[in-house]
Length: 114
Length: 114
DNA sequence: CTTTTGAATTACCTATAAGAAATATAACCC
DNA sequence: GGGTTATATTTCTTATAGGTAATTCAAAAG
Image (cartoon, rainbow over all chains, first blue to last red; front, side, top):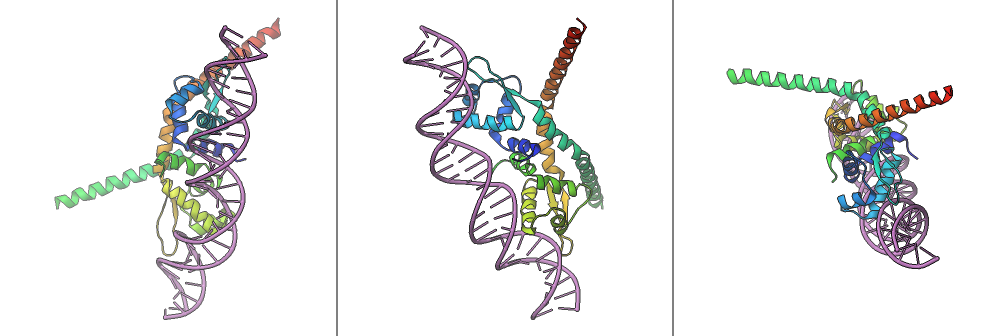
């Protein structure tokens, strides 16, 4: 219903789902592994996995009875690209803030001296 | 209620709010400017701005009657940091995919020759 | 002080999300 | 086939999001 980027950010806007991504970062895990790692019911985990899958943040394969869950770079690619597009602006803002802080500290120092 | 990172990603999970960030990327705009730019009611815009502010994605100052809206790098800093932490994994996945594609193309070429 | 304008808040409605519990599907084992 | 295990789907409830309209607040202008 909503656009892919919104789906991706929405999927990331949940601590459990971010935890799942973190847990599969170093290799695939089964749904049961994820149920054990996140004290949540199995249907709850499956629902989160569906959200992550529709956001292209994970992929699921089929190994015998289990469905190992993998990181999918595609969804994160979109989010990272969007953020990168603004990074220069933020960087500019960082620089301005750094400059402001430096200036204030400098003036404070002068005050202290007088 | 939820953690800062979830608030930030949730704030980014809406096209109108991303549009607002885009519109103020090159300089502050007033609420009325944003109402005109996004066909949405004024209370609607104000509600989005509140979400963005609580996610530390914008700041609002007070100039006479108007409240110019600025980008705030703080919120995006958190989101970017989280994503960067995983970028290496995705990059690894990218590389594996690239390698796979290259290998498949190579085999296809061999097939074509035979 | 009254009016006007910019913006925030409230009230309300509808749609969707998150959670648990129950049930269904799918693959393996005997 | 029948049982078991792994996972998905459905159903229900509660909470929250997003939208509009009406009201309120705040600052400026006359």
